Amino acid sequence: MNSRIAITGMGIISALGEGQSSNYDALIGQRSGISKLENLSTVLADRILVGEIKKTNDQLAMSLNIDLSHGYSRTTLLGMHAVKEALQQANLTGNEANLGFISSTTVGGMDTTEKYVLTYAESEENQRFISAHDAGVSTRDIAAFFGIQGFSTTLSTACSSAANAVMLGARMLQSGQLDRVVVGGSDALSKFTINGFNSLMILSDALCAPFDSNRKGLNLGEAAAYIVMESERVLKDQPKKVLAYLSGYGNANDAFHQTASSADGTGAYLAMNKALNSASLSAQDIDYINAHGTATPNNDAAEGTAMRRIFDLNMPKYSSTKAYTGHTLAAAAAVEAVFSILALQHQVVFPNLNFEVLLDELAVPPVLEVEKCTVDHVLSNSFGFGGNCSTLVFSRNE
Image (cartoon, rainbow, N blue to C red; front, side, top):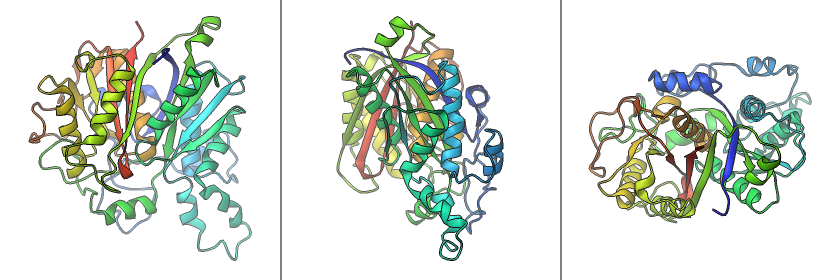
């Protein structure tokens, strides 16, 4: 990268709680947020476990002082909570000049559509919710809520979405098109995604176990997370605390299958290589890998193979944190960006919960306990349907 990208704020709400401190306390306390479904009515409720945020839409709105007559989707409300924390930490109001907003989502307002789709025709009152369905509406509404008037756009590349939002934001900072940018993603649980993943037969009825030979599948989750990135050029004139740096990124597509990775993990391998080259780092410089690790048979084997291709037998400490939050789809890369930065700040790596038996594709097991250690560079993987693979590298502020 031509210049380092400073991270000056971050915000998160997940099944582990609201805010950085709640999430960090759960991570080091090894407390998973996976549970039975409560806020959504579905015939699968008793057959699956999810990473659900235990707040209703009304509770989310009231804590933001939003009138309950609002037309916001759950995806939008979650995003507002995370962006609020990120802006506050970065000491921004939202109406700064040349501040952009790049958000990602897969389901958009699907949770709202599911509630009202059968009554739209006869209910003029419910027709006001129709526009919430579009994925881009969540981005528009969040930006408007905080007064962000600069460049704004929505990305949806399945489970790598937020990583690609980070990459686009970094490129716009480096090119001088933006001075600051809020990047990340938000996704709410919906019957649409639950039924879709169930049809693929990759949902687990037990706690997910990433990289375990006996893994049964993933637990879906919901979350929102955003980080504020600022160019070093701007920080020279307006110095502020830097949490960490985005030092590299890479994206690739193995074009193998709509919903599966190639057995040799080509896309993952290329994305990791590009990210390392972008950061001007070697494989040996990485201290911790926050792996994609969905606990599905295909992903974990392919990612494990790709990591072996990059690191051989010199595997850094690695773990998947999805056993804490569930797989939060478009928000996942942003959630794990926050976790990666927390690892850098606190010089700690987080354990891979529910692990017992090592995969054949991996030579060494993941981290199984909280470990205090030197963490200078974290590599974070996010791989999506359609073969869209993205990797970010975060580095400590020295």
